[in-house]
Length: 383
Image (cartoon, rainbow, N blue to C red; front, side, top):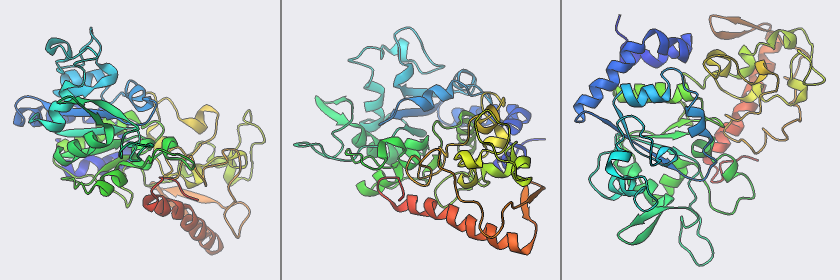
């Protein structure tokens, strides 16, 4: 049967993004093709880099549902600007970088400037990295990051973000840095680095649709492509109060961790070589909302606690500030009981016992407080 747009992310939340993308691959391709036809044969995407290490771009190379090359070549996406791929001898899909001659230092920013200041269309703006809104000594807001020149004047990443976000149909903040500030916006930073939503709010820029935040350091690539497929169907994803798709950010990693049975039986690892629960070694899975355990990474092969290390809380809105640090400091156990037991049924965590229910409610409230705090703090971190 055909996949309706309103069922898409709901199915993802129950089946897992990878499973949905596999079962409905033909529908996803058809969606991109339909949008492309409406837009003159292409879906125009701008991938703008701000302060970051390009880790999310690297992560996109691991996408599998569909993979990045398939998305660009077969789903009619025109990545009009994505500087990490704009080399003299490589063209991503129907981007036209090579044929248009936009692969030299002098010309590489031309498509970006055409989109920001000209009449080139922008269907989707993806921001990777943290916008820097501060003014260096003797400079202006945004001068910490330059992305090119227009009419002989230098253009900051902050200015480009404002122009593009106001024009784009959808704005997607990919990765922890753009969604919540991440490492560039950690406490002590001096560049005015803030999440995308805060940068746009400070500049008074309104977007056509709510900014979608795909948290993670790096972002999960399949979730990014599935989110793109969803918004291109004309369906606004069901977002939580922090702008994250609920399909991927509605359950704590701890709930579905493969080590969960050890926690229930009170067995805790004392070293990372041990197979038991990593709670006492600093695992942040109990306070981090993410579908890592359901969809996994690298084509569904595994995720952090399954592979050996703990969860560092890289999708928590306060990462890398407290409560995700210190990285190896254990979180307090749920209050009121020594070893709470959860019964996982139908994908929903059911609390067993009235005393335990109270403990979990208190701890859940504590876990979510940093998330609410992070949404209002300019630095992207919480105390």
